[in-house]
Structures are given as C-alpha cells and as structure tokens.
Length: 454
Ligand SMILES: *Cc1c(COP(=O)(O)O)cnc(C)c1O
Image (cartoon, rainbow, N blue to C red; front, side):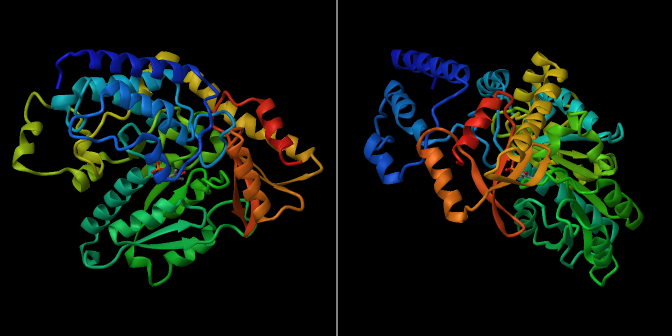
C-alpha cells in the first residue's frame, strides 16, 4: 500500500494543506445537511473498481461534502455540547493515526499508553479520588458509562451471588443523560428514575432516592448514577449527599460528568462537585470540555481491580500480552473495547504543550461567557432568564414566542451560515439554550445572536 506515486504525493500535500488551513480558521463556514440523493448527484459514485484518485476524491470532500457538515468548533455554535479542540490536539490526532499504535496492551503500545496515562493522572487528580484510582480513555461518554456500569454490576453479582439471575437496577435522576437508559438496555438492567428536587433548580431528590432504596427493589439495586453537570441545564447533583447514602447503603456510586467534567479544573465552581472524591467511578468526556477532537471519553475507577475483573478479555492468542516484558498498564482490561485507538494522545500532547493552567483558563472562560450571556439576557426587555447559568449553560425565553418561532429562528440562523443555537425544553416549556465551550466565542458573538431575537 505504500508505493510512492505522484497521486500519493499530491494527495498528501492536499490533505496537509487543508488540515493546516482548517485549524487556522477560527470561523469556518457553517455548513448544513443536504439529502443523500442530492450529495450523490453532486459527487457521483466515489467507490469504483479503479479508484477515482486521491486528488479527485479529496477535492470532492473539500469542495462539496465538508460543506454539508457543521463545524462544531464555530464560535457561534452554542447548540448541544459544542467542542473546541485545540490546534495542538488536532495535529496530534493526525500523528496518532500516522503512528499506527495499537492501544490495547502495553506490550505494543507502551510509549503511547504512557502519554495517555500522563494525561489521565491529571484528570484523576482533578477528581480528588485516592491514589489507587485510575482510568482509561474510551470512545466517549456512552462507552465510559457502559464500562463503569458493567464493572458495577459485575462487582455486585460477585458480592451478592444470590442476585445473579435477577435484573439489576440503576437509580438515577430526571436530569441524567439519555445514554444511561440506552446502556441499561444493552446490559439488560432496569433504570429507576428519581425526581429532581421540587424547585427544579437542583438535582436528584435524595429523600426520594432513599425511599426507593428502602423499597422492595432494594436487593436488585447495584448502582446510583449521579450527574456532574446535566447536559440540558448544567445542574450538578448533591454529590456529597449521594455519596453518604451510597456509602451507608454500600451501593456503587457512578458520577456522569461527560459534559461537566472539564469544570473540575475550574476553581470558581469546583466546590459544586464536592463528594465526587467518594465515587466508585466517574465519566469525563475530553471531547466536550477538555478541547480534544472527536472522539475521546474517559472512565475512572476508584478500584481498578474491580474493573479488570469485569472487562479483561481472555483468549489463547491474547496470553502473550500478559507476559514478562509486556508488563505494564493494559487499557483493554478496563473498558469494553479490545483493539483501541490511543484516544488520549491528542489530549496529552495539547496538555503537555499548553500546561494545565491554560486549560483552567479556557474552562473558566466558558463559565464566564455563560455569566455574561445571563446578564445580557436579564437586561434585555424582550427576553426572560429561565435559569441562571449552570456551569456553561444558560436557559432563557424570548417573550411571546412559541415552539415554531424558536424552530424557525434556529433554522434561519443556520441557513444564513450565521450561528447554530437550538431550543430545548425546561419544565415542559420551550426555551432557548446556550452552551459555551469555545474560548474563542466573544461577547460580540453573544450580542449578535441576541440581536437575532428581536
Ligand atoms: C454527552 C454526554 C454523554 C454521552 O457522551 P458521548 O461522548 O456522546 O457518548 C453522557 N452523559 C452526559 C452527562 C453527557 O453530557
């Protein structure tokens, strides 16, 4: 596959030129989706017996296909949870591919896994978990949540063998991410949703959780999933209270910080996470608020042995990896994947280059932008603040608008290539949601977006 011909040289130059141009452009064109038939009409069939050539294929991507995508790092992309990978991390994502490292076992991946572990050490230090704690990088929060919950149930079944044939139960709150339900399906576990506190401003209602714990469901409950920053509103559950309940009831406490995890590095809000240091497992997505390119999640365990018991794969051809000389940390043992990309390497390089203080600054900036937006909304007569900023999320309403108005506004801003901001629901009501991640977003961007709500 490696004979050097001219097409290969051209293709390589095109790709590098594009990559450098793209990461230098902080306001890339906001593309929008087209129907598949339409795209096919524009580019034709691209997979042919003879190949269409690298230069040609790349041109189709650069001139047509990428324009049917939305650059999630655009400074006026405030929808969903945006991402804003650093240039260093993106460049190192290319290096990660170019280096062809198999990230399952130390035997083959030692130098790369060392990088990942350096970054992981910093992540773990943010949680305040004891020194024995450690983690691995996954494809994202969904895979991290699944890995953690599989470990939790495995541990539960090993310590309560009488429950092995019964369906386990996970307790979580209304604000939990959809992946908890989805992964419970994968595991064939039940999810019991506890309401949030009545005021809707805080997270899981502990009294209600205790009621469930004292019910006849008790013997099947193997984990409580708390959320460290709900995706919709940035609400952090009472982690301290939940930790106390879990400790006295001897139940696994998982904290899903896929979105909010970056804020563990932000001094201004770190107190809100108190209690997280008591967790049995934690999910953090570096591809959300730690400026890594897609995809990169992380799962951290207080007790690595439990995770290893649950996840370590056995097979005759794998035994060699457990040999002398291959001694070291084997990421495959701690999450659901065997063959894996070294997803933590871009984060490592970027952290090593910039230092952790720069990360703290960039995360604080997201929190600050949410506060700035909150104040501007409060001062605007046409708008009504629905919830003060939660981490980097702000919810508000445009007075007099209904669901259709919000939808039309979203589509118009997107069609115009101006911004992508989407509505959500809060207490059954339609509201607008801003989620800030990108430190390149400016006050002027916020003003301009609010201006479109006139
Ligand atoms: C985004 C998110 C997830 C899912 O993570 P993916 O990386 O999309 O798989 C899980 N939990 C929370 C709280 C999230 O915000």
